[in-house]
Length: 160
Image 1: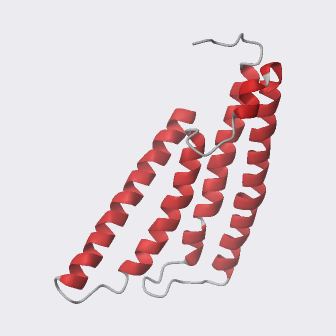
Image 2 (image 1 turned 90 degrees about the vertical axis):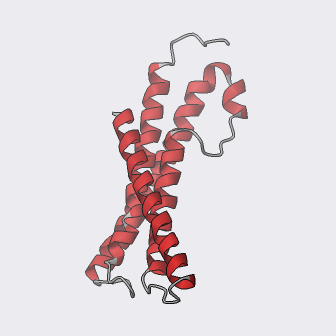
């Protein structure tokens, strides 16, 4: 399941980045070559950056590429599993409470108020949807890491 989530997230991030690059190239071209910049490009670039930033951070967390203090787990010995479970539990609870619940509330409010972007006329709820989606991904990765740590608790440590 994790590989499928990784692949789908990676594909979505590539598509969003490609759209962002094309959008910014069009913005530069239209501004300096045609001297008639598009009115939507600034707004689209901003919204794509929000999605890439939030989903990218969730993907980085899933790949364990985020900044982490691992000095304590490395020296913990038998308590390593407990520390890993505790740390990932905190991450899961935080992402569910703040990103998912808080983000879902923001999406709901923007949807109820029918907020729309100025240049594109897009529903702002769609932009805000990046927060709960990234929170779900972070929680998924944290829970999967907890399950992996739990399964490996009785296995002897591998030495390299």
